[in-house]
Length: 104
Length: 258
Image 1: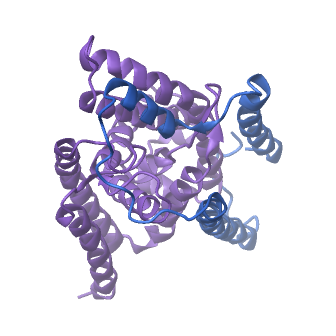
Image 2 (image 1 turned 60 degrees about the vertical axis):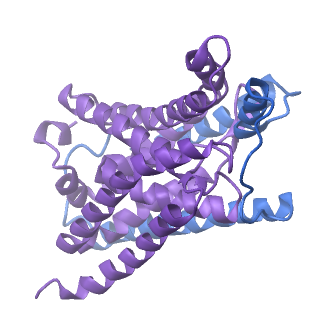
């Protein structure tokens, strides 16, 4: 894939995420699991969750920090690995031609 | 013994997964996990899904240790598949239904390592999210592992194999696989909730439609995003790590040439 194709694909992901915000600006955008909770209580008003989470992040800020950490740790590894791959190919130079099919 | 150096690694893996399983098994409310909130499945269902998921995760663990013993080089690639699940499952994205959800990221790992290995990876991610993020839960772990780590990947793997048989273009096959992994995960989540909470009129089918209306519809644009992200990473791997990838996937010549 050409670099421009990669960029276009990334742009598509950004647009997919931005579209709902533009289309339904007044929506609450709460978690889908929370909405399921409402339906459960609608179907069975007496149901009570019989178990609380062991530990809950004390605030939304801390929760988003943990989520950011999770994403950052994953991205770090992906970047490291993909960087290593591309460096490996760079070192080999043109000696090892990549098989046909990558210019996809 | 030539593979002796990896014994320690396998041992460490065993202790970790053993601990995870024990936690699931011994916790009196042992069960499901990810998108179903803690405590929101009746305990019978919790146990049921834990029992259904356990053999898959166990087989996943076995096939993973076997893979690493014969091919320790795949460790990095395996890390990549796990890291991908970590990243995208932390991305809560807005959707057209006016609510938010997140992709699963299991499609990539399913393509690379098959559905069994990914069930173990999913279990680890789900455990992390339920313990540290109050997202999913220990009592719902079995159910969530089943939807995200077993049903989604199995369906995705079937699609991937079918796509290979039909010689679909690689990018299309990879996107379809990732899309399916995501959609099936949430359809199964809806089904699990529907079975546990059937409606008075219409039973579980009516309630399935209701839950799927939330989970599955919300998930469509996210599944598209996931498909695109998976293609990006997969194509990068394909360009830069061609050899390892075609050995791993046992890719036929015609597909390679596409």
